[in-house]
Amino acid sequence: MPGKPSTPRPPETDLGRKRRARRINRTLAQAYPDAHCELDFSDPLELTVATVLSAQCTDVRVNQVTPELFRRFPTAADYAAADPADIEEIIRPTGFFRAKAGHLIGLGQALVGRFDGRVPEGLDDLVSLPGVGRKTAHVVRGNAFGLPGLTVDTHFKRLVGRLRLTGETDPVKIEYAIAELIEKKEWTMFSHRLIFHGRRICHARRPECGRCPIARDCPSRGEFA
Image: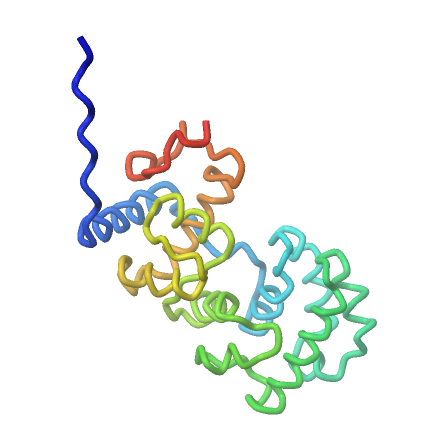
């Protein structure tokens, strides 16, 4: 005799999704107590430069080239006056080195011309700089200035989709959607934790669901076996 058909699970409410998102954040905080920005830097300018270089490149590779870059170009004025070939030679391993060199020179010129050579804290000011989008701006604000922000990189975007915390695919819409779920004071650390998790367990092709600390709160668990 056939068994009873399973009863479909009711759709998740907005409140249920918020509670699950915050539970995920708490679990990730326990799993990754040392979560942090993995770019090496000592001041806001260095972090801004490193984040510009991280486009289409790993943090590990960026960290390999920035010591020499930071030694040769310690100030915004140094980037503003640089010969593109000198920067290109150093940053070549990060890929797209000609475009990135142009961004760094433009960045230096904008900082000298409009911000007295200092990296600004405001989001609108930051995104007005060459090579700086919302992702870079939130990295700088969150890690150099201690201002809360959600960094929607490829890992973050992939994981919030798998966790079904939002159906949005545009990075700005994702940012706004997650901002409604996670407490503002937790935005920067939630970004770090989710990115750590994406790099270590929830890989793009073959996530390791069997050892995932948030599997019980993941509607996609087991789908990639």
